Length: 105
Image (cartoon, rainbow, N blue to C red; front, top):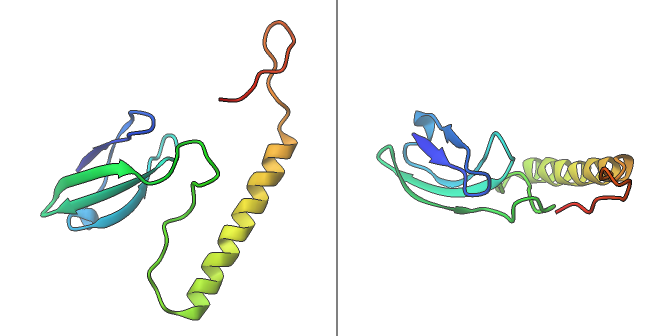
């Protein structure tokens, strides 16, 4: 089944495991989250799952009630946020040809 990313326009495929699915998928090109709904192997709905380019890009929420799994999920989210913050601090702002700092979009 083919999906067109709402964030970047990239077309990507998902396999038969998603034939009857409702939830989040991540674009392999831009990392944007898409909320999709499929039924009988056909795509029924696609909408943004998070604001593209924001810190809201996060793993899909699980619906488990296992406390150990939930604790691991929260720890993963915490570590992911720490890595993003460290990476943002480590990368200098790009410069334009005129030598001025360029503001990210």
